[in-house]
Length: 120
Image 1 (cartoon, rainbow, N blue to C red):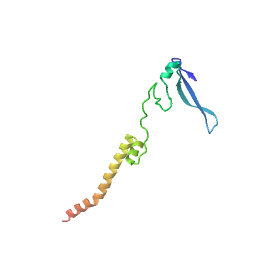
Image 2 (cartoon, helix red, strand yellow):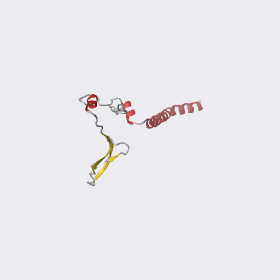
Image 3 (cartoon, rainbow, N blue to C red):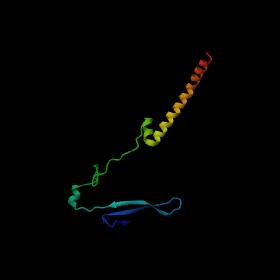
Image 4 (cartoon, rainbow, N blue to C red):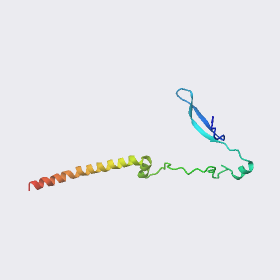
């Protein structure tokens, strides 16, 4: 544990775990913890995490954003799995491929019309 000299109520707690390959105990990270001791009357007024009540206060945290939602809509799933920059590149390459396919499909008709006009 490392104590913060500026704030005595907070400290860093080292997390360790056993490496499966080597069998040695290794550091896995740190968590900054804080414990507050309150008088009973204050603690009774501000019960945190009691039963099914909302414990999100002291401090209040925002709702999580960007959670993955399962959906049967393939476009919604694609938008969740692929970032906007990569999506733009994919859309651009698909548009270019579509243009090439259309040109290749129309080219015989255009060439046939040009050749027919040359000999008439």
